[in-house]
Amino acid sequence: DAKTTQPTSMDCAEGRAANLPCNHSTISGNEYVYWYRQIHSQGPQYIIHGLKNNETNEMASLIITEDRKSSTLILPHATLRDTAVYYCIVRQKDSNYQLIWGAGTKLIIKP
Amino acid sequence: DVKVTQSSRYLVKRTGEKVFLECVQDMDHENMFWYRQDPGLGLRLIYFSYDVKMKEKGDIPEGYSVSREKKERFSLILESASTNQTSMYLCATQTGDLRPLHFGNGTRLTVT
Image 1 (cartoon, rainbow over the protein chains, first blue to last red):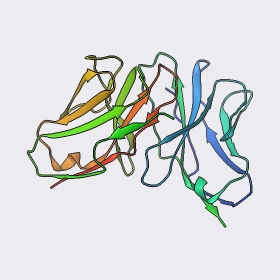
Image 2 (cartoon, rainbow over the protein chains, first blue to last red):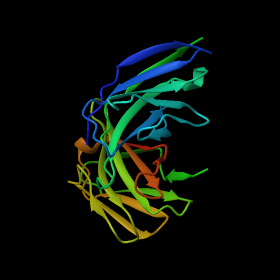
Image 3 (cartoon, chains in turn blue, yellow):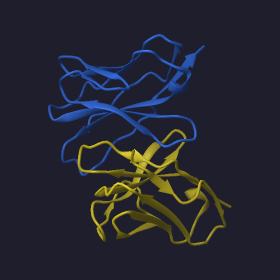
C-alpha cells in the first residue's frame, strides 16, 4: 500500500473552513483514499473516502487531484468539536483488510 | 448508528495473568478487528476475523490469540500478559471489504 504524508499539526479558527492536506505520491490506480479522525479518548471515526472523483457527505468534502498524488479534506465550518487527529490512509482493494495508519495531523480549532 | 462496545474502558493486570478483552457489535457486521495503539507507532492490526470461527493474523499477532464463537462477539486474549502489552486496544467492525471501519472507544490496558 502507498504511504501518506501529512503535516504534524494545524490550527484553524472556529467557523472557518479547515483544509487538511495529504500527499500520496506513490498511489496506484486501484488504491482508495480514506480519512478518519480520532477525538481524544475515543476510537477513530470514519469521515469519507474516494478513488478518483471528489466526494462530499454530511461531515466533509474530499478533493483528489487529477493525478491522484494528493488530496485535501475540507471541513466547511469547523467547530471546537472538530479538534482531533485526522488520518489520511490509502488502501488497495483486496489488500487483505490492512490499513496502514500514520501519525496523522493534529487539528486544533481555536475560538 | 453502529454500536461497538468494549467491555472495559480501563484495565490493570499483573504480569503473567491471562487477560480477556471483549468486543460486541450490534449491527451484524461480517468483519471484526483488534488493533493496538501506541504513541509514535499509530494503530497496528493484531488479528481480524471475517466470519464466525475464522481468524487471520495481522501485523503483530505474537502474544495474542482471538476467539469468535458468535458473529457479534470478538475476543482478544493475552495468554500471559507482559509489560510490553500495556497499550490502548481498539476493536472495529466492518460490513465488507473497502467499507468504513466502526471503532469502539477502546480499552486502556496497563500490565504491571
